[in-house]
Image (tube, rainbow, N blue to C red):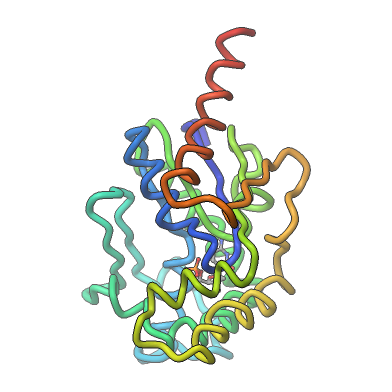
Length: 226
Ligand code: DC
């Protein structure tokens, strides 16, 4: 990948989507939410003919999963074929079933090449790519690699505020239980070598955005001074 990449991983409720989107706006970069593709595939398993969980291992997803996503932070949308899934992939039903899809090795391999293709085809000078395995598997050579975390009780509180209708039990299933399940497949709780940790437990949204932007700016100034 020849573009300037910022890879951001982190658990559910860490704020990585909203922070990544805002950092992309500030820097004039693209924003790629990689979890959306896993969610869209989980939605397809629930709603589309020819997609069942056990069959995903042998499915040619490159041919059969017509996935597209916007990398514009001010015009975000997600589509599969003729379906606009921008809102549908945020339902509890999808959040609670997505881990089963994400743990299939063939699905992860497909997602890795899908993500790399989306970045390359965008022809954008820079992209903020966020997910769970971006710093370690998808883009380990990214210029900037960040693990964005927050204490569990803070993440639960943030997600509850976002999902105002959801019960405490449902939020816990969508945050803690999903993380426990997802982290069996990829480690997004401890930073790999070369990955910088940003703990947002005691930071508000703006402070977290500033922390990430300043890591990127520091990288630029270190390069200039070399
Ligand atoms: O970030 P999110 O909550 O939208 O992610 C949805 C699911 O996708 C999450 O439960 C784990 C999976 N995922 C993944 O395994 N690897 C990624 N790079 C991004 C998401």
